[in-house]
Image (cartoon, rainbow, N blue to C red; front, top):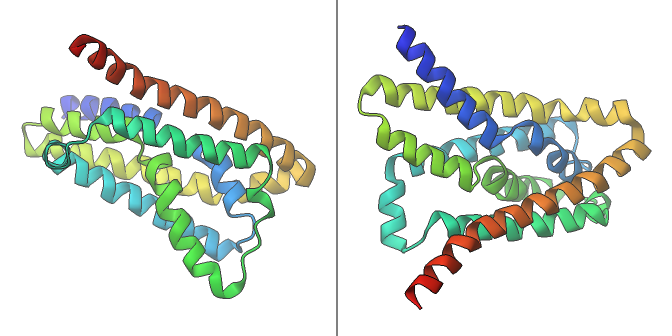
Length: 212
């Protein structure tokens, strides 16, 4: 029992740091400003479900998918970096905050942003996907597999409540504070994007140079 609790704590901690529920709040706050509370909750739920399905899919079939499509984790990092950079640039220029969604387009908008970029790659990014693949390969017993799945569920439950609670944070800092925060977080997201891009590109360049 003690061994399983220790494993749960370790797996949970690794997913929590990689999924980073609190880090997803600025993007969520910015992209859902035009939505009411009900739609925000729906967006958060769909994003978390998307991340859960993605992580489970890669946990059980990750290596097979990589081989079939000839893709790598480094490719995921590069694409994630590009998406993050564009998102951060829009946040820095306050473009996202000016989006106004008509009632008839709300459902389509929620469906779009809850899958990309909120579900993938912000919650289920290259790091958490890689983590799910590696940990599933190391999970040789049914108990270990269940611990892995439970850890993902717990982290995404925390992510859901973090995203839903972000609206209260906006009210706390006010309109001006939110604009300043959005620009600041946009800059941070762009820095994260560069780190993602470089970390994915370096191994590829290293392999090319070795081949050359």
